[in-house]
Amino acid sequence: MTPSDAEQDDELAPELREIADRAHAAGLKVWTLRWNAHPTVAIVGEPELRVEFPAGRAQREVRISRRDAADWASTDFAHWVFLGDYDAFLDRSSGTVVAALGYTADGFGLAQKKIPGLVPMPEDDPDLAPREGEALTETAFREPVRLRVEHPSVEGLSITIQRPPPRALRVACRENPRTWGVAITGVTTERHDQALGLLQEISTSFFIDLDLSYGLAFRLKKDYRVEWASEPSDEDALSTKMPRFPVLAHNYDAASLYLYARTLVSAPLLEYLAYYQVLEFFMPKYARVAAIQKLRDVLRDPRFDHDDDVVLGRIIEMVTDTGRASATEREQLKATVTRCVDASALVGYLEGHPHGAAAMADKKRISDVRLLNPKDTSASLVEQVADRIYDLRCRIVHGKEGGNGRGEPLRPFGRESKLLTYDLDLIRFVAQRVLITSSGPATWGR
Image (cartoon, rainbow, N blue to C red; front, side, top):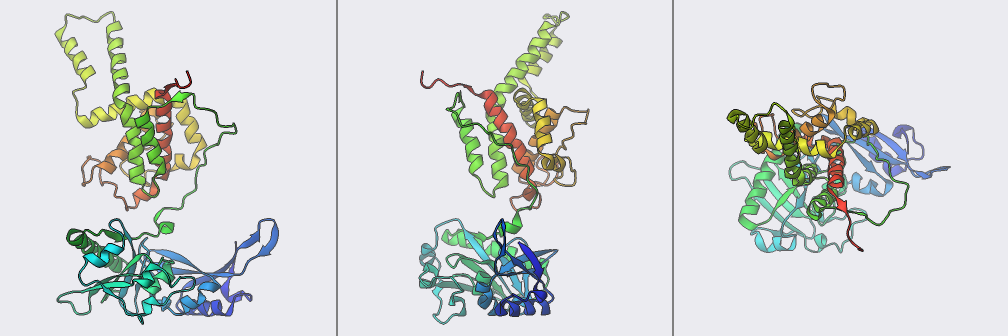
């Protein structure tokens, strides 16, 4: 793509020029981009606009093609402030917050039967005007519905859910008309953080009420282009050999957990815990192996006195591991990783994943977890990896502050949860090694 200044782009379509002029007048950054028509030929496509809208301490970039120009021209976009990483914005000129909704229960049709006050939208409603490319035969346009609830004592403050979503939202975020939208009117602030807080607090309480009263579950929809941090990736080297018929048999339950983790998309905490369950599956086995080895080492000592009750008591305590449950699990995990992952393999992994290695050595990135430093002589790299995996596991599963004694828990939509890419790569690698070490020769075909 080739960027250029919209003001200097003589090939910009007149309808896009109008949008660019309005954006400039509103103080928005605007430029044009052209898509290369062919990677080896110097032919570029028709210019498109890119406009940067304010979004708190960040910016939200939107794309506007000539096909979108008429839709954008019909909106009052100069007063929009996008909110967080949601498909949502504040219209400062009207004091309205609009947002797209996701849904998790019962679909759309049942909503008409379950919620008193949900009424058809009038045929002349502005939100029923389709934007370019929207089909009038869409279910949302054939069965448009709206539910509006007013605050009992604050004049002008109301919350509305509707399908199709407000037309301006469909223009701004390219929302499908079959989804639901929410609008909060009577918003008196023009500040991003306050508007975002109102959206989250009012809508969340309203959705809980809808679920309790009507069994309908809604949530605010995320803009996943914004939600997940855009970070450089470490590409794994792919095999150049033809696939072979499998010669190793994996434990079905553990392997199923691993494959389940591989199917999860945009759910980093759930994905992480699924990989952890692979390790957890084998932890009793390798903890027992480690305990047996400890016992064997003690019994090999020529100074061992089997008549010394104190010594025997220490042996019993050692092999039964009567310490705290959290310490037991940490030690079991270390025993599993130590048995299944060679230190040289971890060194090779970090060397082959430089972005991940740098991220997992950065104390400012994710707090309250063990850093990975191959030069740290206080613990082996294998122990560091096991500690980091366990620290993250604790921050995920302990759902209250201070639940694991290591600070704030990780929340599904928190800042640090968006930074788990490299840790997911690492725990997947460890889970792979544990699966391989724990596999056996295949017996099929014999």
